[in-house]
Length: 207
Image (cartoon, rainbow, N blue to C red; front, side, top):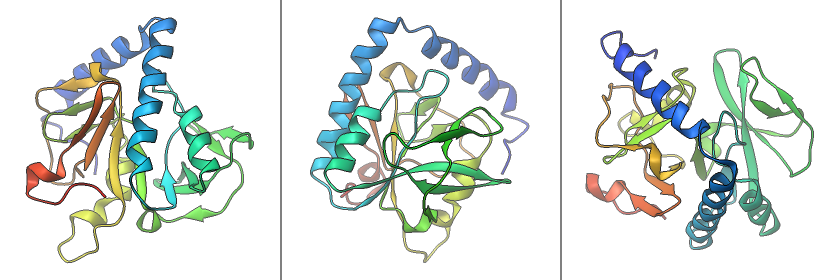
């Protein structure tokens, strides 16, 4: 599930532009946006059941959700972080303050903890580089999330966890090229609010 060669140049250019914008955010502005995002995440999750929550730690300018993750843990949620196993991605339970190790891309991962298969998660808070107004997600280009949740595209399969992108508002674009293997977002949380995409597809909202 690598990127379509016909769309690679456009995606690469967009990815580089938005990564540069994200990394260029002044630190004071980033702290404000992260506080707003954490508040939005907590407000969204407060109304919704489900114990097993996958999330991410900040890398290359991604939002810092650690304060929100700590609150979710205190409220009884199990937080899981992605770990790379060869070409696959699984999720390992993580407690705030536990040891982390850098994977081959330099992304911090839990060194220990119980593994959880993607199908067993309830919620997935997903990092991204860009998102469209219809819920298409542009990641870093490795395809790990699309491969991990490809089962959601199979007819007759249980839908599995709810996939929620978490990003700064500046990462929104009008449209993104979508391939048949791209797993769409169910919702997006930004510093300015929550947007549901499931209802655009005639499905009930994330709950």
